[in-house]
Length: 366
Image: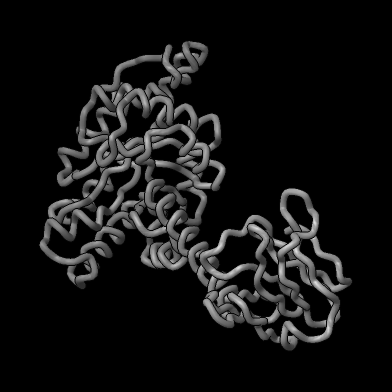
């Protein structure tokens, strides 16, 4: 009986998976929607308990992605419970010897091939609806991890063992066990040796890589038949950083462009870029279109409360034939408008009303 994982591994092109480290069912839904072939629920390096793993397995099955569980180590009782929860495969870390591989195979197989107990009323048995012989014919995928020099030496025999379905090279642990960086030629040669041994035994072999086209291409060229594209937490973090960096760059450019034509207000003459505002304490300010005192209609002050002329307001004129309304405060108004702009009091004054001049001579409240 073939599940989604066996079908993906037999497809001929490298199967794509990722690690699940975040204990949330929504993560599994997103992985399925992204189009991954399988997801490995990580009980070794993530705070995921068996009940959460149980729910993640169910979500995976309902959304069409093959659920695999990586155990913290070989534990036949835990392996049995997760398989009855519906896991299509188990991954066992740090398998260094044939004896360890044989014990792992026994834990996932029913008698006479192994020692797995019968639990056909579980999810794996469709809650008892699946005929017993069909339930017993299920063959979960066992993936043993090769993560040490000893494991590499025994990889050929482990791959040839009945019950072992695939190998996965743990490059990080392999390099650390040797005290060498992952890029060291000796580490690369041990990896290549393991790949050759898996191919000779006719079993799939995978690795854990980055979430880039280059990483996937390198894995395929190295002979891996499946690869892990990063993990859910790292994928989320990378997407979040990309979004923030792009947004910060965009708002920085936008802010620089807006400020390029502007100078700060002063107590004397102050100018803004074309179309901007000018304010001064007592003198008209020159703008890009000429002096504010150029020909134009009269400007009159507006009282913010009554919209009536402020009696003590001074008069200003706007360039281009328009009129500008000044601000009024306590019967005193100062300032002049530039072409297309507006006038307001100098820094330090309060602004009960801000008024702009339009090109047809009418003032409008801002």
